[in-house]
Length: 135
Image 1 (spheres, rainbow, N blue to C red):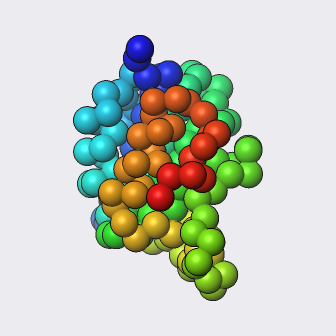
Image 2: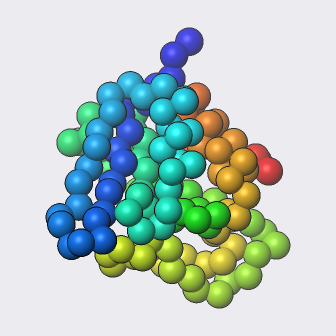
């Protein structure tokens, strides 16, 4: 069975103030998704989005924000975000090149392999069910 993911957006910012760009990949392979996440650097490549619908009509995308060993995984519309129950509630900023993304330290994953496991489950299912159980 194939992945329900219909697209992957990779947002790129430039240090020389050129406008940001979005590279959209239709029906991405897991290898493409994993590569994009490993490439994230919190400035030039701070955002990867996966979606199960047309990217122009999708407000339910799975978002990976950050880079350099600090990632947040979340979904705006379902109010889901990764949370480490043992983490603290100190506010932190990810995504340094624009308005940024603010969350709590307990929402930041510092283990890339854990972030990839959670993302892989979403990639395989297109569902937020059971993502919290992955550790």
